[in-house]
Amino acid sequence: MIPWTHLGLAKIPNNGGELELTQRDKEFSIHLKGVRGELMNSRMHSSELALADLGCAHVKNTDNAKVLVGGMGMGFTLAAALEATTESSTVVVAELVPDVIEWNKGALGECAGRPLDNDRVVVELGDVAELFKSKPGKEQHPEYDSILLDVDNGPEGFTHGENNNLYSLESLAAIRKTLKPKGMLAVWSAYHDPKFTTQLKKAKFKVDTKTVRAHKGKGSKHTIYLAQKL
Image: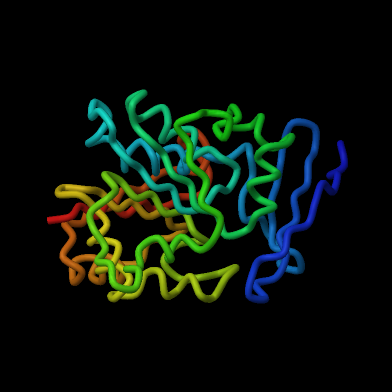
């Protein structure tokens, strides 16, 4: 069996631990150092593609749409968002860990077809939650047609505890303000949590959920929450 090769370590800000990138032949893996199990694997990304396909379905023929992808990962959601939108549209990708962006500019980028090379992509380094906050003396205005969040393992933070705040009722209300009328918030989760559906409804979203497989109709079942602004 071909052994795994260590490619890099990346510190998660605010003492969130370290991410490790490894490679075996054409397969890449990212996991949290010191924790068993993978966060993501390049062979299993069907649900990441589904996040963009479902979250951008309403703007596939819309000119000048603007989509926000929260979490770069291995680039699959970003690549799918580019495919799902028109050539006049912009896709912003927010990533907390700068090294993850650099990994995707390097060898890892081949997995998703190097979406960062597309001139429709804007990279925002930092916590995606900051993009939803009103600046002093300035109100937040509707900006995005779709917001696609793949942060940690879902609505409950795993690698970065502060991610819990991203899905609080207050934060969901702030996210809603940044969405245009009929805009869509799509959230990837490793599991289904009915309480999060209730939370989204309290934040005045129309909610649907989809179950998708990790790898081409097989593998683990993941949940995509689809929350449309009413």
